[in-house]
Amino acid sequence: MCGIMGYIGDSEPTKIILEGLAKHEYRGYDSAGIAVIKDGAIQEIRTTGRVCQLAEKVKETGFTGEFGIGHTRWATHGGVTENNAHPHISSDDKVVLVHNGIIENAREIRAELEAKGIKFHTETDTESAVQYLGYVYDGDPKGAIVKLTKRIRGAFALVIMFYDKNEEFWVVRKGSPLVVGHAGHEGFCASDPTALLEYTRDVWFMDDDEMAQITREGCKFFDFNGVEHEKKTMHLDWDSAMTSRGEYAHFMLKEIHEQPDVMTHTLLGRVANNEVDLSRELDWTPEQVKGWKKIHFVACGTSHYATMIAARIMETLGNFEIRTEVASEYRYMNIPIGPDTLAIFVSQSGETADTLHAARLAMSKGAKCLVITNVRGSTIHREVGDALVTPAGPEIGVAATKTFTAQITILTLLGLYMAKLRGELLPEPEKNLVGALMDIPAKLSRILDQEKVIEQIARNFADARGFFFIGRGLAYPPALEGALKLKEISYLHAEAYPAGEMKHGPIALLDKELPVVALVPKGFLWEKTISNIEESMARKSPIIAIATEGDEEIKHYSENVIYTPATEPELFPFIAVIPLQLFAYYVARQRGCDIDMPRNLAKSVTVE
Ligand code: AGP
Image (tube, rainbow, N blue to C red; front, side, top):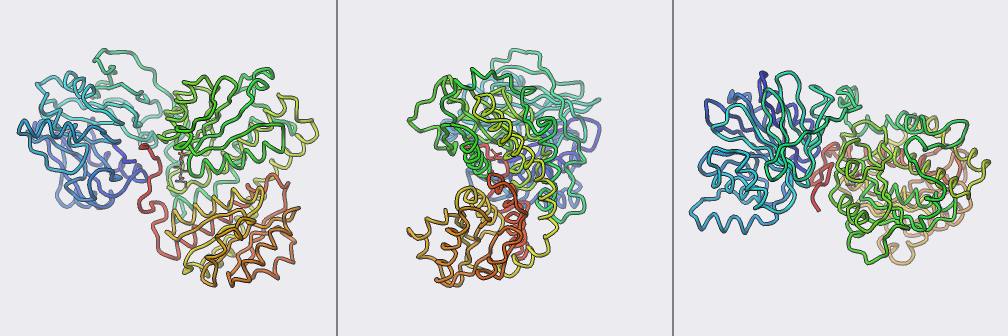
């Protein structure tokens, strides 16, 4: 939530900062601003709306400076107004900063400073930090920041400039992501490493309770007591070309189309001769794996649905005792977690605050923890250590698509590997399932070939009042994901239910304006799902069916059939999700929605 960027060097700072903010826009996009140091004074420009509107304003006014900081906002405290937009400047014009996070004791600090006569100008929590810094600043930036870190509570990534320091800016981190880079005579910081790829691929990920001074000459790192320490860079294995939209109308569409390749890359090096081998990444022994009596999957949103699929697949592979929990709930559950627990945290971004806090809790209770993330070096990766990194490349669309496919691929491999180490999976079923997994990317490409059919069906239903998504067994979690995609980007109400559960209440809502998307693959639950389709039809709900190629009978129930290639029943979620993503995409497109940056959402949710 919120994206921040800082630059010092010989290039035009507003250009670099605007380009960086554009790459951060998926983190928040209700207002934006830049501050620079120019002729020994702080100057700023802000606007409500998008980074492109800020760029227009910069161009019109000829706004420029020597170096600067910028921000794109996802409002937490205070409405979406220009006045609440960052950067914020202290009343004495000595300090300016941008902030990502929440300052929890902002009211208390504000009251204290107002009592001392300092005037506040915004409704934001951030202003308490800048006013406090202005109040304590006496020409020593490091000393003032040390005092600030002892006064504020909450989560914060801050980038700070001081009016009389014409050769440096400062960054501070506790709880919100921040990455720093340096190349030649240029220093950078950003919330997201993708913003730095153009300039350097060797970066420093800031840790909690750490601050840094960035100058043209280099970066110096300090703890919150101001004591300097050495810090190692991390090499990013992404490149800047991966962050371009190419020929696609939206990042989401590009990322949907990348899925066959992403899945192939995820399998690469982890399977050979139809067998799974994760020993290069996990040094687990059979004894250890047998010792983990409980498996907890913890995640949020789409990543949570990926874990539901993993759990169901794993239950078919071995005798596992599994819980899948939403991270924001896991933290407050009174359940036994200990050394006999393997807790698996799944987070595309690796920065989701709820998941990170849940991981800290499990670590503190002695559980063995593992992370599945798409961002090497992300906070959760660094803190937990043991990880399987999905090679999906940067995902820019706010709605997760390709990372979901990568997650379910790697989680399926993990399930197979664990069942094997536990001695519960025989070679033949392993070979069969791995073989079937390796066939999936080609099947995904075949589904993508049907894009026009899916687009037409989506157009036909774009004016619906809302949608139900139903499925049974392994068709239920993808139904949840399909409904989430649709509500995120089209703003239509969409609800997913296990098909058999509809009659216990939700069926009361059905009528001719509420279509039902039924996931009905051929298999032992086909007939039962058909019964639920009949029940929906009896209430006049139009049916959109996701069915298996060759299923002619389904046409008796629906004029809107999206056919998917046949696969092993366990792997149906892989096949089901692409039609659902495309359906959501084209409904949203028909409705004229802002697909890559849906309202009220942010890609990386770094507040609790
Ligand atoms: C998915 O489309 C959403 N943007 C959201 O539900 C997301 O999956 C969730 O916030 C978890 O994010 P993470 O995987 O980065 O932790």
